[in-house]
Structures are given as C-alpha cells and as structure tokens.
Length: 185
Image (cartoon, rainbow, N blue to C red; front, side, top):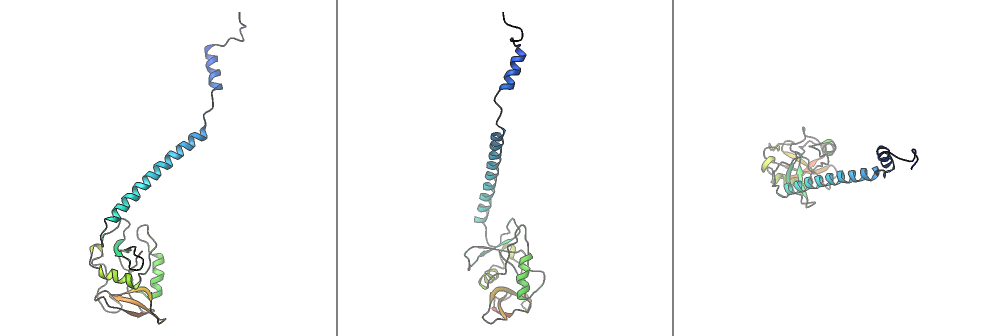
C-alpha cells in the first residue's frame, strides 16, 4: 500500500505536467512574426515598384505622373527621363533667384528639382505642346515674358543661357534680369 502523500490525483498530475512543460520560446516566436511581417512588407513594396516601373515604361511625353510631375522627355545631358514641374515659378526672377527657387519647390513628394540645362530647356520647348505640358508655358515672347532660364552659364560672367518659348531662340541673358523658370528633376 502506498503512502497517502505519495499518491497524486489526476488533477495534481495535470498540474505537475503543466508546471514542468517546456517553456515557449517567445523570442523565436517574435522573430518569426517580425520576419513574416518584414517579408509581407517587402513583397508589397516590390509589387508597388513593379507597378510603378510598368507605368513609367508606358509613359509618353506629356503624361502626368502620380506624383504630379509631367514626363518631359529624355535629358540630352544625362540620357535619363526628365520630369517637369507642372507649372512655372510664380514670378519671373533673376538667375540666382531661379536657383534658390529650386531648393524650396515641392511637387507631390518630390523636392529634388533644378533649373534645366540649355539642352534640357530645348527639350521642354520641343515638347511644350504635348499632353499635360500644353498650355502651361509663358509664350508671349516679350522680355522677360516668354523667356526661360537655363542653368547653363555663358562664358561671360554676367550672362547665362535662356530660351524664348514663343519662337525657340536660345540666347544669353543678363543674370540679374528677369525670366520665367520651369524646373525639372
């Protein structure tokens, strides 16, 4: 016969089994959960990037992009896609003010704008009547109206290149004079 204190009831056996079971590895569980969340986030980002790449691949000059910029063509300087702000700077400005304006311009989530080079400005001129670019440029032709700054300096220190958007003429302008500005990225 067994001694009464050595015999365990079924309830006591269950309690002992519960108390002596292996402890769950919470760190492993958390790591697995974080890995799964990270994988899901990466898959979502990859799908979004693929959709954006497909949209860009099918983009035509003048198409408005989801961020609000307008696809303006290929930059002759970088051989990369060039996107224009959807509107001119609010006022005509001198060469230095145009460069400063690019630092504060924000369209959608983009804030990496610059004044186009002389060659890029000509691409804007050539494509000024396409898609969402049409009707957005100052075409009156008088100075400073109709003239746009480029970021390309002239060999003479006080001059920089600009372009008249009513006739396409490129010429140097005095840097402290006013011209329109259309930024690109």
